[in-house]
Length: 231
Image (cartoon, rainbow, N blue to C red; front, side, top):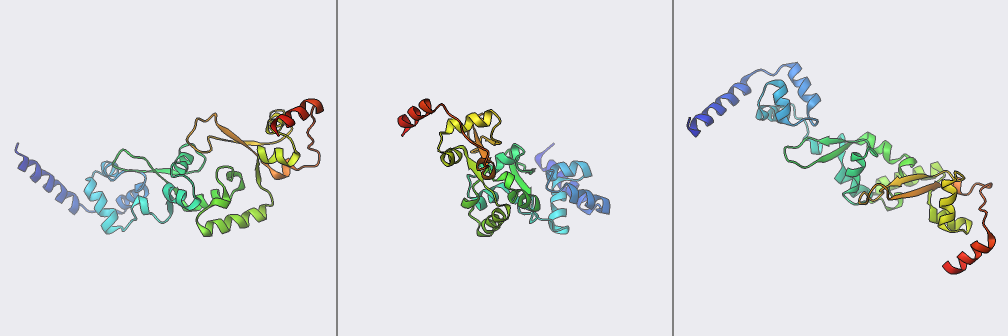
């Protein structure tokens, strides 16, 4: 069979696919699967060609492309808005830190996106502020929103160094109290998303670090000698 025969068959098949009536059920399935599967995969489900599926959502249903759907925000845009490295938000999605999904692509690259309302809920939750610095957020509207939420919250996350400075002790003393259960703290494993998961920073709420009953006890001689060496 000559190449012209293949072309003629493909054109004929496409023409038949285009004239086949789209039912309400076809459109319902297409709307539901659009953005979650590739056009080729959707076509296999509907018994249509990839081109027919693409033409239907783009030309007839006027659905937005998966990468520019206004109800979503891509992880690249999240990185730009928060002022973090482009590699970090995709890893948040991969690790389940931020609820997101993968954009179907015909290439081998993975692209992630997050529902806009889910992203905003995640962003203003103080429990997630261990992953980024709210004061370094680039987008002015988001930064203003976060600063307002921080005032309403009335607390903040401290590092072990900040806790140590407040109590005039050393970092190892704070870590010792955390491991002993005397200070409640949470860890942000691999916060930069560039190291192994065993790299972790401890974060302590200011209200926890400054509670009146939290006192550090040392061997005064040993501790004094250590301070002199480090001072």
